[in-house]
Length: 189
Image (spheres, rainbow, N blue to C red):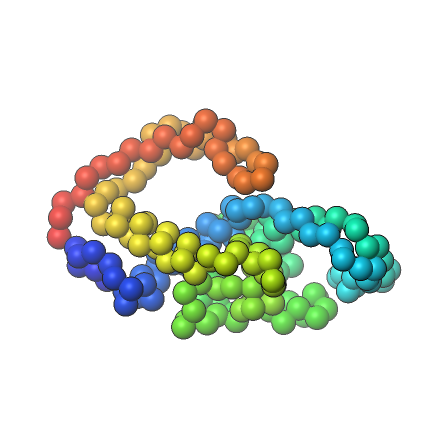
């Protein structure tokens, strides 16, 4: 009941915590894109991954596929419930001493959304580094306002059984045949 029926403004964004955490958790489970591709500009050696002692050499020109989908659903990084939709996880610090070198996730209540720095690169919905989406803050703020406005006016439910929705992947994750929903007008406050 942050907005009390009025339209949100910029100052309301941080107070819409439940909306922001719901969007964050949605981006964790359904990242857009689910895979990033980077090309090595020079020969390099990757840091050791947990569970391996062998160094991996990468040669100049090699395409590296970063599986964001797997990263965001890793039980080693996000716990045994990594496959579950649980927005409250973003309020909780997370570490795993079994993952060498990972600094864990530290919530930052002053941030619009948890980014790659807060999670030591375990959460990268907009990419990271010099190729990170330049519009991440705008996109997240816009999505927060749109979702808050939608939920102010309507109750939203699936118009078909969840099993019928289906998912397809490619450059993005999308539904196989759209997402039929039922909007029921709410009574104004």
